Length: 99
Image (cartoon, rainbow, N blue to C red; front, side, top):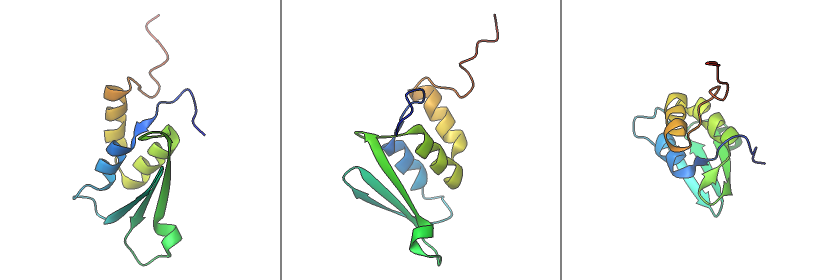
């Protein structure tokens, strides 16, 4: 369920970061309507290598799922820059300390 205090993140941005060519684990992407599966190559069981993401709006996923993917696939810096530029959201910046 989407938290109204956090922005949504574009699934296209998530795809571009996870499916980059310089990424160490090779990832396959399977899309089925509003669900996207990212499957990492390896020898572990399939359920341990599969990351499922559901869209809450057309082409948008919730903040929590996006951050979990960013932590796992190591693009936390890129997603924080994207959120600041595209959603005008900066973690911790809602407190004005100048007053």
